[in-house]
Image 1 (spheres, rainbow, N blue to C red):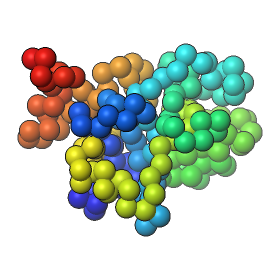
Image 2 (cartoon, rainbow, N blue to C red):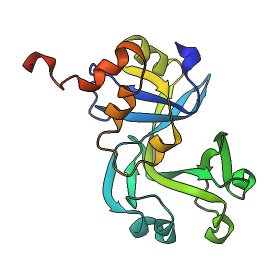
Image 3 (cartoon, rainbow, N blue to C red):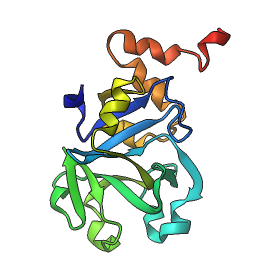
Image 4 (cartoon, rainbow, N blue to C red):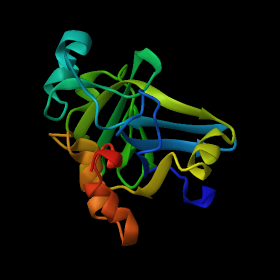
Length: 186
């Protein structure tokens, strides 16, 4: 299953994952290598407007224009995931991860970014795993690894994102979309 791990894949928390940082989360993997993996939680918006923390970046982020809680690591830092405009993949401050999706350096002057990015979302913190840690969590059944879509990253209302992603999966995995939080109460 580790061959499925790559930038652009989604990790969906299984019902067996009880860590409060990750219950019901959808994590977008941004980097996977021999030293570990890094991603951001897509479905944890905060109430904090981006403009209050990062000024003019609040004018260009997707709705809702708030910071998202990207994970429990380095919560005082920010990662900006962006969709480059066609031809904007080589713009200043942009690092392609796959297709036109990548990371935008928020230290890049805004005027250099204007017109090069179609969509932007900013995450406070990230989720990280050391070498072999994520593979072990997958093997024990904590995560489902599935393909992503660009819209998953920039969805306006992320409340139901996990169920939406599960519903479109083939086979038995789609059935988990309708599973109650506690099947024993069923």
